[in-house]
Length: 356
Image 1 (cartoon, one colour):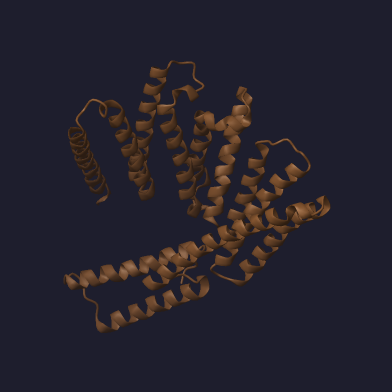
Image 2: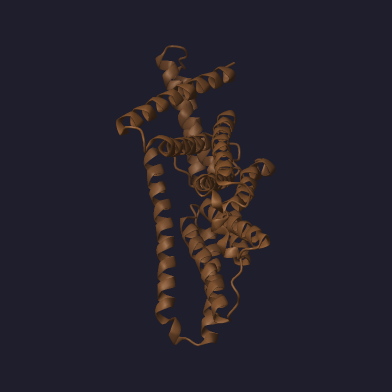
């Protein structure tokens, strides 16, 4: 058996084995290829042995029921981590005023360190890393609370640099233990840091970065481009980078289409709205095209969803107030059918290009 790089690669191999078996059964049913009893027995023995080795070495799911249980465990580990975060916060909030400053500082420093030690222990003794993921969320929340409360105790001026530290901490945990949820949290922190820094450089207070959506466009684009630089070294993280980056870009464009006064460009309301409307549709269309070209199904769906959102938003703005409602929804339905036809032709053309 060739050695997979990690658990996700091993899980993909399991899925390929199941797909191979299903396809082979279909081909045999159509009479195209039929293996002898000996060949079928040897093949089944080899595939079963491979699945068994993968399950033993990587603790992957080799059946549909196991996969459903694993999904439930991942959900439970996330919910459990969030529950523990809330418990830690509420516990300290309840008794915090009874502690001295020295005790408060000691606790704030000790809690993240203790959770990190527990993470390392569980990571060495479990293959699935469900408990490690749970502790990772607690460690990240504890670290945020650590810096926020210490800043309050010692009267430190709030700064956007806290988001840089939080993001770096989350990324270290994500890359150490291969957790995509922590990677997403770290990326969000870094995006806020960059946008807040650009806001501060432009003059306003850094915390008003939410009123400067344009400053989120550049870091969002940088997140989308990271997988191109990274290559296949951390391929299981690439979707997270694209997802966080694109959602950031699309959300910023949606806000700018409506609230042009938030723009830093020295243009009037109408020109700004026109610019960002065209930019939004172009960005969604480019995302769909690139997703189809590179076979990124999730990215295609994301681009399609925002393209539909932008389109419906514009149609409401243009026609809702003066057009009969039945006619409005009729036109929206016809446009949806037209777009489905276009996407179907694109899909068919892509399929013809890919066929030998």
